[in-house]
Length: 525
Image (tube, rainbow, N blue to C red; front, side, top):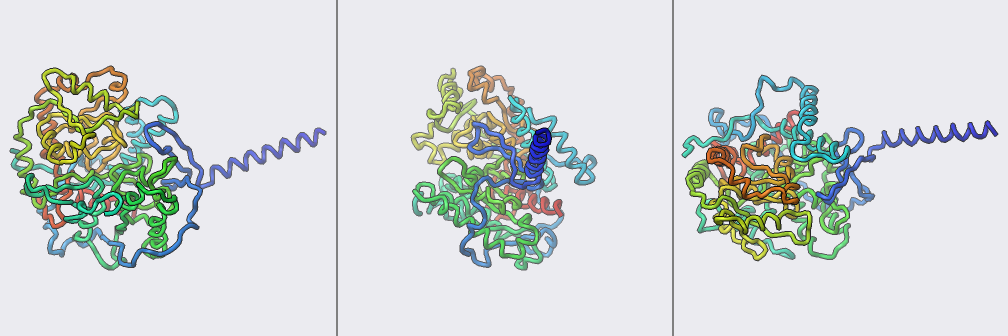
């Protein structure tokens, strides 16, 4: 009897340690945190892989080969001289945002990662006070990955203006002018009716004319894959089709890529996808829309450029939403800077948007109430629920007339309106760090106080603060300093120039993005 009991205990101990070994060594083991802020769980995968795949569907579902052999565009980082349209060394375009101090720069990767860990430990609770150990861990991871992305920002000087003074959803018209849409004649040169999801078209046009493009894949350092995943999601959005249909094209693209030596050589780590929607539209989970493209294991190594990133995925890179302004020359940018720098601001604050009555956690209704009830008409509200925001001029006029622009979350954390307000010289008022601070590591500076005002979302929700009264307390010098920084240093790096653009003084959003991509690849070598 004693022997039997001892034998059972030994068996249980063996099974316990065997299961523990499996968990720790299994690549698809995840630690996940859930939050009402997002539709998806925040998952941290065991081992060295940066991502995860929750879906039970595996890669055996790959079928078909639908992508032609000339669809992968190739860039290289060296041999820039010798191209007719490349700037000479003394005319190198200027950089945006914080420039690392060369003396303090980490000497190797181990030093860099140690510094990032220290910063994450210090800063993770700057905006949100974690309520649990799980939320604390998730916030710290978000800050860590953001700082790692900042380490890939291509070095350079700041942008400084020396003058200082068709089917389903009908998107056909937005495909004109290489994705910019129809020209807006009454706004002048460089203004277009650009759709918020046009990023894929815009960047594709610029890549085709990039001076570092090569046609021999053995010379390439970076591979651009022109898969329009955002439009692929949109075409099925309002149709009753199966998940297999929604996922098919993305899976076919990956199957084709896996047949290429250029992909197999580095397991896709030197490939980049531009996806013109938010990351959650490619991480279908408990919702009927979108695809699971970014959940596929094959998509964990490549870099993904999106208008909103998953903060816990280091290879998700957020870049600016497209605005309506697409300059072609330095003079186009300078002329616009001079105009908005001298523009009288008749409104203290404004809000362009609509309420979310079906979402009790959303603060928009509270903000609208505070805005419309403010004294002296210091806050203007443009109601987007009656299509008032469909005319770009209505939005741009409002932002040019305002000192502060309220930017609460809408259907997701980020807003195109943040960038519309910035290019108009209107200081954005942000209520959650996921709107901007945890997103745009390459295009917005780490110190958010230089270009925005932060008010905690929870304080507004619980009516502990009046936003208009907080903004009234800002001094004239504070407002002028922020607006000057936005107009003269941030603005050029937030717009996507014309595909034939020839900038010498400035770098636009595309230049910063692809210079930083090449820096990311260089650091990984």
